[in-house]
Image (cartoon, rainbow, N blue to C red; front, side, top):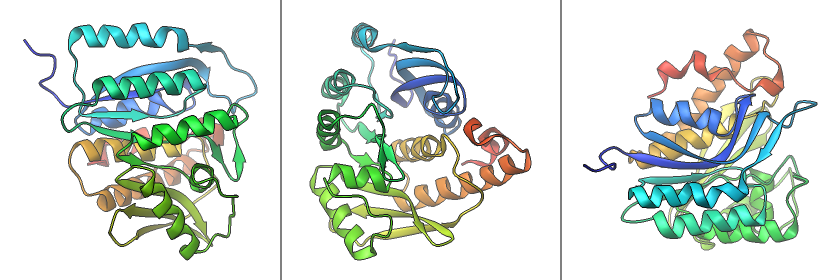
Length: 275
């Protein structure tokens, strides 16, 4: 009997028990959209690092043994979706996983979580950024924010980047290997704009009115929807619009519940409407 009779996405990311991010977000969303979510934990957190204190357990040395068991089971995946990676070794393990498990029409979705608001995360060295560029080369779809996009193309961050300049960034990212690029959450006045690039196609934009302050985990919600929809064969623009609208409604509800920013968005309140 085969273990591969249902669509599956391997999700490589950390687990945060509290705070709504990473695998804790990906698992319910991907499952709700009709796909089995199979996590590969890179580390375990009691709660994510925006809180003043947290428990942390690095899973790097266990990842390969964990993955080897999947190989012995003969598992196949329709999608491989990567999130935050904490070291060069983890990125190398992920590249090897893609080499081993990307078969047939499996899609690779990379959320290159390295930075935000013009600032690179402390854990990300120049060497790790170079490793991430290699991982992006393996991807079918990538979902960087503006800061991450500029790091990937080795350009200085510019919050006021013009659409013409951004188009060149998108083209450079496509030239790195992905078939589809979504540069997420670019601030344009009172709007957030997601820019969608595909080779030899016009740039498409999805604009959403900003509601409230930035919250932890919204990028994970966004990329989880994109990953599941891609495996389900949905159009990328429709998927980006769906993810943007879903997050906006969830943020409005979250604000109404007076939930702290670091607790993320109360997407559970609207999950039943996600289709």
